[in-house]
Structures are given as structure tokens and as C-alpha cells.
Image 1 (cartoon, rainbow, N blue to C red):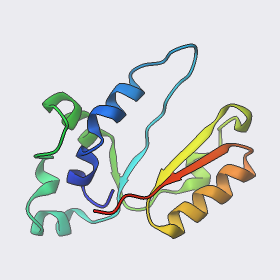
Image 2 (image 1 turned 180 degrees about the vertical axis):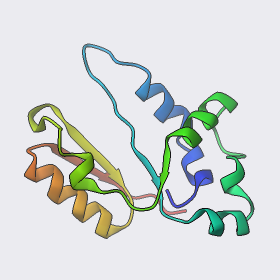
Image 3 (image 1 turned 90 degrees about the vertical axis):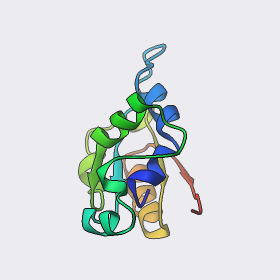
Length: 118
């Protein structure tokens, strides 16, 4: 998402997925906000805390704690995945989707992309 507030829309789902390992399946979440903290603070204070949206206080705090700012280094993030057992999900602008797809397929992982318009 571009802002912390955008990510809050998915807070409950991401929190539950990352905390429920069933049948040996792990769900690892890497969240990135591409808008800088200064921009978010000027645009209504979203960086100070996620407000509104679907997340409870616990899940909203969890999302805030997971967020990294800037663009992800995909080759580094995915360097240790076992492609035969991994699926890479990505949501973001087309250049990010293209890069994630290239890295996932190079590693032999399944790939899925979503686009959300805010």
C-alpha cells in the first residue's frame, strides 16, 4: 500500500494469516509503504497511527510494526525461498508486479498478483 492507512484495510486478514500455521504451511508477510513518512504526515497524519478501516487496535498495531518504508529489494527478500513450496503474492504498481513475477519465476515459485485502486 502507499500509506499505513491503506494497509489497515487488510489488517485483520493479514494478521490472522500470519498467526495461523496449519498443516505445516507458513504465511510470511512483508509490508512496504512507498510514500515517505513526511508525505503521510502532511497528508493527514496516517503515519502517526492507523485510524479508521477494518483493523482492531491489536491488528492495527501489528500492521504498523510490520511496515517497512520504501521499495522492497525483491531478490534479497526471496533469495531463500524454496520455489517448489512457495507462492509469492504481490499487490502494487505494474513495475513492482513485473519485478516480483520475474524473481518468483526465477526461483520456481508460484506467482499471484492483485491490483487495488484506492
